[in-house]
Image 1 (tube, rainbow, N blue to C red):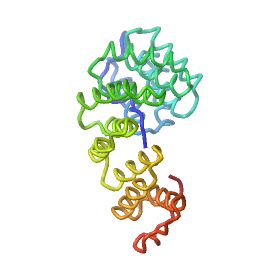
Image 2 (cartoon, rainbow, N blue to C red):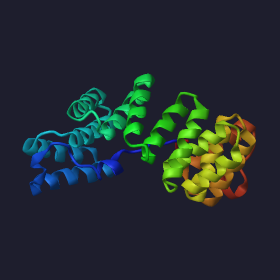
Image 3 (tube, rainbow, N blue to C red):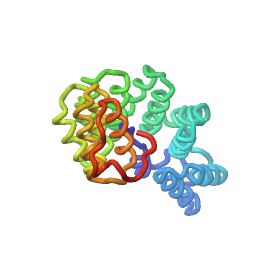
Length: 257
């Protein structure tokens, strides 16, 4: 499925502006733990590490951005927004905070505000592939597919192994009707079964149920345990009035597409 980028890869490389206590080894360790916890999506552990860091060293742009990401991903949007805005008051050129706030605005449907912060993040860090991916995803979600294609192509140009950008680019190609390029991007992003399932999703979104069926069938045959593909295949087979082939008619029960 379509995914947006995380922010942690860049955050892990950046120093906290103006935080003199960062020379203290324990504070360094706490912030490093917080980075690692955010990277591994262990939100509660990240918040605990950041609380300890703030109690000792005080907030800085990086720590506030990390906490905002954890809060955003837990659905606590008002507090996340406050942290991102606080980070930007401390350092208005802190690109990770602009990028994180842009994603939050997109999730909340405030697309114009989101675009402003996407553009600022890219102005400050024009070679950050994840930021181009996030911007491309936002453009795709708004139906601005030509611009989305440009942004997502830039993302994979800068970081050819960025799988989420490849996946998003595949869906953007599919929306443009170029399923050959879409398939190529999915193949570069995922194992064969996941790639075929994504292609099926793209065909189904375009109302092309027969090729969607074929793609889902290929996904299930490549990985009989891939529940999403099995569920999607069953749904499309019902819509087409087709019986499932004998070799896939039995197997793990799917739940959700």
